Image (tube, rainbow, N blue to C red; front, side, top):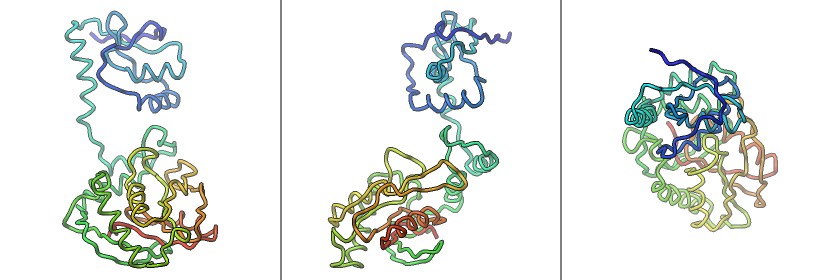
Length: 297
């Protein structure tokens, strides 16, 4: 027999004290979802009002100050079944995978800003899927090439190919930072020589697009290169101004003191972010040398 949903005061249900799942990072996104679409998925509780499924929705509702929430009471479960269901409900979602090409297509049809729910620019999913399909790898063997793209020249010291490690794996691996930083420093020392002085040159990266906090591959490379070269590295020189997926805008957050800027990125695909960052620096009178670790050929 189907359980009936009820609208109950939020103070009459309670989180499970031994909940083994930490949902802190998801609360804000779920709150935004409830604010935008309504409370469409009820919380599941036992006979005593203890939550079996829906701890994140409960915390989101508390954050939003909702006086009541929709609840289904699972009155037919034994205490052991209740524990098992609580774990099974949390575990089931871990086996699901996003199909990046289909996800990108769905996001592209939505004008609503989906970044508030944790989604990225559709192009990011398409790019990752293309890397998987084409099996693009990088063997991290130095191969310096200068090319032109999107109206600017750039130099790379690695390239993609059919041997090596997957790009996404490299970008997520802290141990890969050091060889990248070494090659960056080596190229700059050999190409600029005695001109590479602290008061004349500095390092910066393109703005973070996918992760505003936490490990950022290009940033960590520049930090090590700063130590090796003895020149200043500026974080967050340029920031993303809006959350638009289609037409992102950027603003200059910090204007470097040095006249010459080495603009670094870990990989180049479309070149749009590099182009816009470079333009903001040029408008401030800087000379900009663009260096990219991996040429995504």
